[in-house]
Image 1 (cartoon, rainbow, N blue to C red):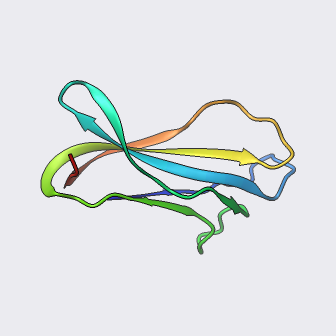
Image 2: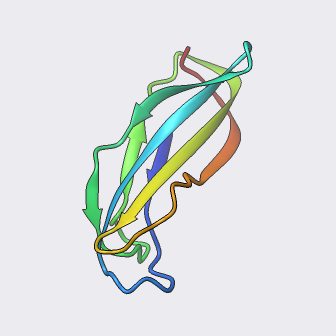
Length: 96
């Protein structure tokens, strides 16, 4: 299982950001459990060729499981909100 993190400049004035992402697996007790996080990296805005972080967890079976990938972006020299956007998908990967 892999998740990626990056940022797009939008209306930010800064051109570098500290970025990392973490993968969370859904459990039947109605909880999300963190399974892997990428290293923190200082990145340029994403252009489609590199400039991203990667979190990876090894699957133990192909059972369909719900996953979330949370990304944290802190643009250098700018204040930001504490939100942690995420994408969610059901994937044939169970880590346990």
